[in-house]
Length: 219
Image (cartoon, rainbow, N blue to C red; front, side, top):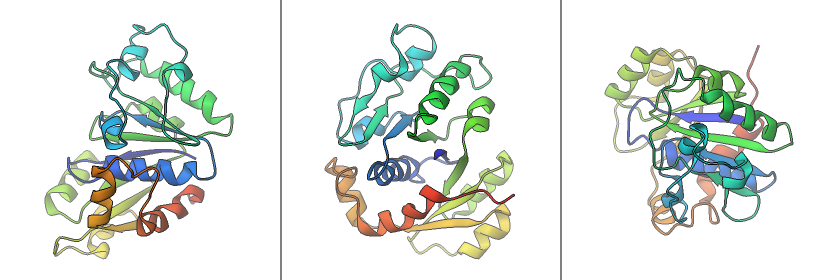
């Protein structure tokens, strides 16, 4: 599995979904969580490093990619974003990251990318097996998703909060299948706030995301 989690609107839950998906993957397979949004160390209870992917891509860190990974329990490692802005999504610097991730993925390691709402490099988009749009059934979010017109493997829908729009509405507007639904749950927030999401994944969250580990794109 090499997948990108992304959203078109902040506050959709993309970082939590990416962290949980990586944690579920790590139960059976070595997994790297690539943090392009910048929140994963704090979300997982780790110290946020001053340098990371952004400095590595600009060649300010003379390290192999694997040497900057942060361990987060058994089988899970995190590549933090770093303190600088990421290169423009059209920059050739992304080729270095894509090459490193592809080589690691070829060694039977799963890759989960938390892209947040950042523009995504076409090169990264193409090397990933799948990408999932994380969205709430919100008119403004759906409108932004339609405007961006990105092709996506499937939608992960965050439900709850007395929204009027339904799963069917989301699928109809985006012309894409909702492949998982995650209900807003105070237990998820408690695990995040305590830094225990990766080690104590709420059962409902695990059940919703586990099928994505073997999800294949229909041809």
